[in-house]
Image (cartoon, rainbow, N blue to C red):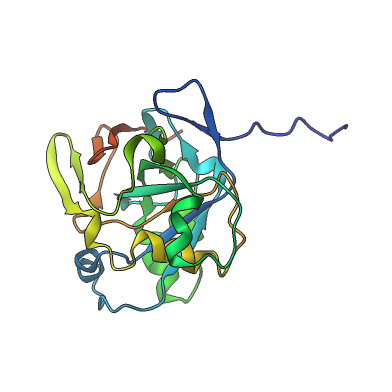
Length: 230
């Protein structure tokens, strides 16, 4: 097949302890999923229907250096558990979701907070605040067969060695099996989909030179450094 220009390469993530790569299809995200984070954003942590949004697949990065993005002066980190989907499904029952999970990863939902807030006030989508270049750093994918089911466990983040986020996966408002079930009622989930499941309290701004480390029990850690804008 001939194209008018060379198509971009496929985004993929290394599989831990393997020579294989996990090809990325779509990147779904869940907002407002830890009560204390909802409160720190000035909102009421009610169990409303899940707040879903998306990032482009090429927002995924696995390198350690992330350029400070344009258009913001309030650039935030958010450490998150990431679920990797391994097979197609729709209208999945909550009790059946485990067969659709390939594995898990540690991720950052990097956010242009000022743009997210201003968009929200105007009733606009969050894309400019959430779905930009380099906004989804992620670790290797750890297969479910290696690490088992993750419904609890410590999630933490440090900035320049100082603790900023420290919580437990079990504190999610919407649990993993509920997230997958609800999302599958809106989209046909495909192998290669990633689901960022929300962040706990303690988010904050970073600047070039800051070094961030996010960690999740059983999944290890992922480190990034914020560098000067491109």
